Length: 402
Image (cartoon, rainbow, N blue to C red; front, side, top):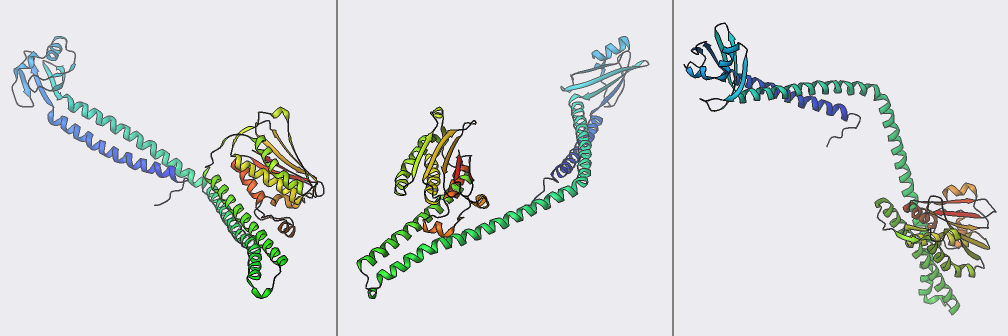
């Protein structure tokens, strides 16, 4: 199917309209011509003297009842022309009669009324078609003139759009390549550890004692858990992107503060094990006003990710979680630590997939590099955002708005 640019659509439609109107005009002209010819065939002209005698009749018949017609009597009486539509007594159809006095005679013309109305209708339709044709010709000239005036700017805009599309395609290709590379790298490390530990356990000649076997089993468990966590995060991210694209998430009214409280309670054991004080603050004036349409499971997952990041990577001895209502009615969830902070140059990329500030340290602490990317997509899915403010050595504050 041929694609017509929107730029050329108006003149194309105008030309199509001109063609259609020309066809209609030609058709109506032909119909009007036939209607006139029909009138010429059916018209009857009679010349009657003042005594009512037919002196001439185009049909060639002598019909003395002309004298009984009202229009003839009226013209004979006052000499004024008369026209009337009535049923013919001989043909039994509606006829248009016109009578006019000429000297001592009355000229009388009779035409089938249907032929007159057909001719009139064809004339009106022909006039409308002519007007439409003229208007569309003017419109076509206007659009074609404008086309040449706008051509350079249109081509420039099209070139810019193509350049943007090419750049987007390059970004997508880089993203695809980086994603595959990162996933491959992330999977290779635990798989290699699992294979190594498995081979050693299966080697009968290794003469492993109970302590060695327990250590290898711990390695298997650790790497398997890491691999499962990575697969779960990749699947979660894929589901979020699909939900964003299809806008297919059933939101229900939820108390955001209750959801955050649940996430904090779930994280308290990990905080105690790390000797970190985890606190939760909710402003009293916001009580009962933080009910928002959302997916409670996803919001809890996002808050849990932010808390776990603060507990694992911040080196802070205290982490504070707070929730409050914004003036626009949305809920703002903040996770604040007083740890090592995040370098400013790293912050713009912090929510990218697999991005790590210190890769070796992140690997040793068991992160997948997808947690903050998941938080970003959850925020976007709820029409909100997530942002970070931090300075090196002064801690970090992550803010989730939903």
